[in-house]
Image (cartoon, rainbow, N blue to C red; front, side, top):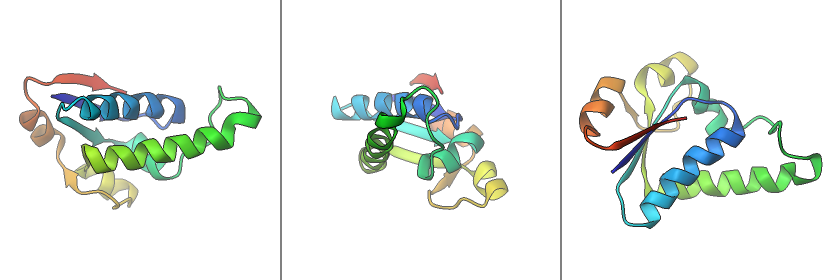
Length: 112
């Protein structure tokens, strides 16, 4: 199992975290994610990427959206309950951080 804690609001780092999850899921591995404060808004409304040239920003955004949708369809992606409450973003099911860690004990853990 791959377990990822997505905290960043940086769309490029978020892209990498989602890529890891989707790659694991496509290889038949269980993939789970806990979306924290920073990533919760960025997952659905990412800011412009800073390291992507202007002419590639829209294609990057489209690819990031497709990657997000694939992760939501193939991985178990939940929001940190405290983050969802504090930010008012409620588009995902929620789980507490201690419960997520308990349920993913023994998994490869990635923090983005």
